[in-house]
Image 1: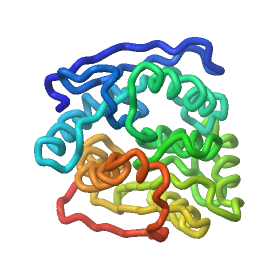
Image 2: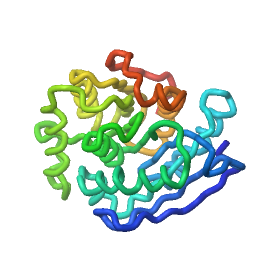
Image 3: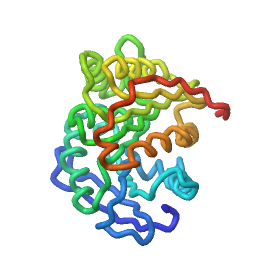
Amino acid sequence: MLVSVGRARITVSGTPVGEVDLAVVTPHGSRRSQQLPLLLAHDGPEYARRAHLLRVLHDAHLSGRLPPMRVALLRPGPRNARYAANPHYAEALTEHVVPRVLTAYRTAGRPTIMGASLGALAALQAEWLRPGTFAGLFLQSGSFFRKRLDGEESFEHWHRVTSFVTQVGRARRRRTDARITLTCGSAEGNLRNNELMARTLERQGHDVDLAVVPGRHDWPSWHRSFDPHLIDLLAVTTRSPVTAATDDALPARIALVERATGP
């Protein structure tokens, strides 16, 4: 699916955070008018190079677990400024970048988005502020910092991040029908705030899974989390446009998954 591919570079101009660069990777021989699922990846080039994202999706397609799909590899630009709970970036993503890609390529259902660390935080904020944009969120080792838990006060965007996490925690009801999968390494410092975020989202009625897997806050650990967790999420969000957009029949849940493979 994604080994022999087409790749189109796109620059989205005029957004609230300036230009956003991305590459859309398409299955070989597919046409722009062909209706295919879409996955967007924060830190996309790093996901492709260091976590072998495209190879994993290719293998899942060959084994019949996933359909062919397009992947939008988003370049972070000034990463901390954009991904650290910046509402202007959320607007740029949902009101400029996603519409640009959906205009250029016929897409089956709503897209799924993924990200790690601050990229996971930015993905959650985008759907939180513009609910209904995405069918699924794959959030790895999210930087869901809390004032009483994390010693990251020196981080330049600490207040912005903790304010958004507090905003999420104060919500009384479900904000989005997107399916949400969180993964976090059992040996990393973000585990506690990921557990708390998962419980918060579950309490609000969201469809959420938390997978605690062996590993740390690094690309090899994030790669190992793809199978089965990313593949399982995509198997649901890509199975049909109608189901991905409207099916909220499954109860919210937190599944603590300890995988046998070591870090």
